[in-house]
Length: 266
Ligand SMILES: *[C@@H]1O[C@H](CO)[C@@H](O)[C@H](O)[C@H]1NC(C)=O
Ligand SMILES: *[C@@H]1O[C@H](CO)[C@@H](O)[C@H](O)[C@H]1NC(C)=O
Ligand SMILES: *[C@@H]1O[C@H](CO)[C@@H](O)[C@H](O)[C@H]1NC(C)=O
Ligand SMILES: *[C@@H]1O[C@H](CO)[C@@H](O)[C@H](O)[C@H]1NC(C)=O
Ligand SMILES: *[C@@H]1O[C@H](CO)[C@@H](O)[C@H](O)[C@H]1NC(C)=O
Image (cartoon, rainbow, N blue to C red; front, side, top):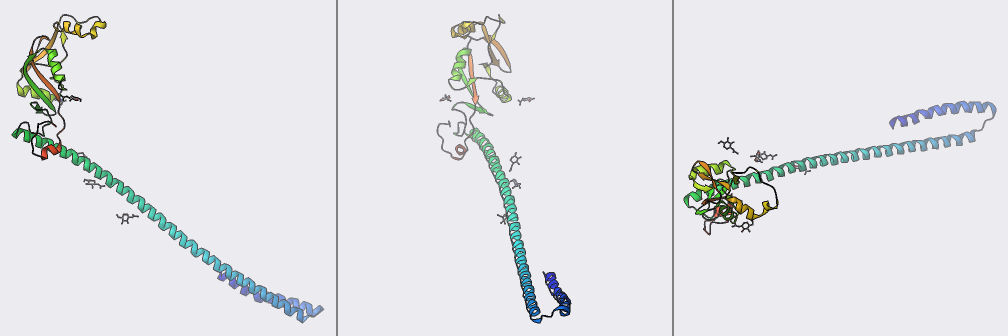
């Protein structure tokens, strides 16, 4: 802006010089001082207007520049705020995820603790109500076992176990094997599928689903029973003792904390 103003000032004496030249020229031909005076005034006014316009332009420019600067700063601040907010939100999300994982970990730890405590309580007082097995069932690792002293055929044993939502003793887990070894079981049916001794194959017909046929065939079938650390085959219609097995429920934390003893079930 200052440059432009200087230019206007410089231009003034220059235009005056041309004026003098023109005047000299006019003196030579036809002198007219009144006309020249008006012209000079007009030129001065025009220059003044020009100057004012330039100043106005300069002021407008500076206003525009300042406004632009302020707005840009505001925009930058807003941008920074947005970034900080996004950072805070993601930090919050991570912290929340951590919190829920912590809670999950804590509840797993609490469950483990309750189970351990319940085992201790049952050692002191068998049939404590925290026990996750029905009354008169044994709790070993994650399973419940029931040892019956009555002698039954393999099929009867299976039926009486399933009536209690259990199955004949399975040996699918190491813990069951450990249980069998620790209890020294003699003459108990095992829940393994019966085997045929005389035939390896039989015709597949509608009789296969008839229980009559199954019953008729049971005396030809051989089932396994456990005797100490060994198992033997016997005809499935013979009578042995029955051992049932089922999964233990999980220990209820509140059943460990409260001491009142009800029926030992949950
Ligand atoms: C972001 O978190 C910091 C520290 O917790 C806090 O001081 C700041 O105000 C938060 N920023 C926003 C934009 O919420
Ligand atoms: C998440 O939790 C663990 C254990 O409580 C802690 O050591 C870790 O600093 C936490 N991380 C965050 C991002 O909060
Ligand atoms: C939760 O437990 C798992 C496995 O034990 C572990 O890797 C993780 O760091 C734990 N988380 C917290 C937040 O403590
Ligand atoms: C066996 O399970 C069924 C359904 O799950 C239940 O209604 C029934 O009471 C259970 N019986 C025993 C003896 O636990
Ligand atoms: C069972 O125990 C044997 C030896 O004690 C071990 O080699 C095997 O991995 C165990 N199986 C399972 C499923 O834990």
